[in-house]
Length: 119
Image (tube, rainbow, N blue to C red; front, side, top):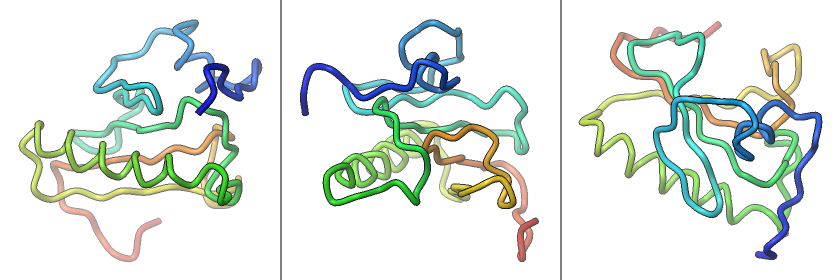
């Protein structure tokens, strides 16, 4: 990976990973950033995002897909550290599905019963 990440200067999550907007950090490394959701939908609710700007799952390619695998490794690590043995991972793609920030992100929700079907 190059030293210069592809970022969108107008993107809320790019601003968070750059430290321009404060957040409640859960985890950070050179590829991704995790932080608590400002409007939690469960007792534990955090997001994990790549530092590189990828608009959504629909923007994942052979050239950037390794970060998705890494994000799932991070989710497994952080949930173990938080003592969570049951949780849901969600990624919304597009406005109709509820994506409000056009930057790939995974919601990790835990601490309550998750109903099915969702939404």
